[in-house]
Length: 159
Image (spheres, helix red, strand yellow):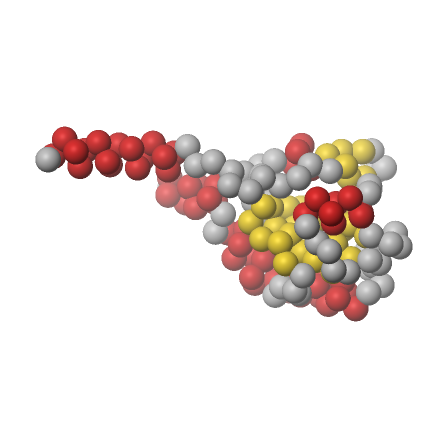
């Protein structure tokens, strides 16, 4: 009986140590401030927030940016990167939050499964697509998702 429980404990520990990405984020191309192209796969190890909108002037996009601004410093301390993907009209992001832009906004929206005009996705450090929604998220909720990813929790357990 003890051997069986010992086996279950070892099996559970092995599974937890080897947690797999359940919902991998799609890879897409980015253009940074310098204009040099990059890809999402190169950002693995950092949390990423992707905001999809038809234009930087839409009300939903501006509201989401305002909500993120409230928690920007705490998200930045987690080394969170912000990406804007515009599906119809490209433009500069009117915010003090540094945003990278997706090279092809419509394909990013399609890859994330965002069919409405607005959406937000949070990708964890492990490359897992933690949340995709068409609702405006409070900055605290985005911070909670970043802090509660598997990799973040695993780091806290080691301390």
